[in-house]
Length: 127
Image (cartoon, rainbow, N blue to C red; front, side):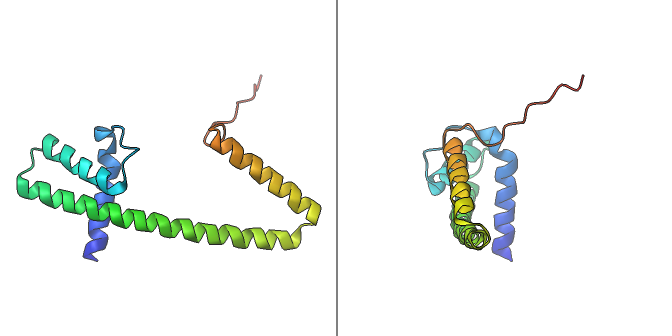
């Protein structure tokens, strides 16, 4: 329970404070990013050395736990996608399944190109 609380606190903290400390940390691994976050907090919040060590420990533990949770979720989703695909394949004809595969490949390609995603659909004129 204590670990869950700590993770929840750290998650909420990162969620609210992330914008305040936004820099280009994209190339860093999660633990290095957590350490960098602790360094920023030490400076901005004028933390004592003891507080800085505790915050660094909390951030590092959170980063490791979050990475493990992400990996577990990736595996769970991959298994669910495989099961879905197998079940759909049982329902479709070979030609339909081939067409579905092509549609999904196109979607993946567009997503990799950055053209798909969270774009808003165009509004139609209601005039």
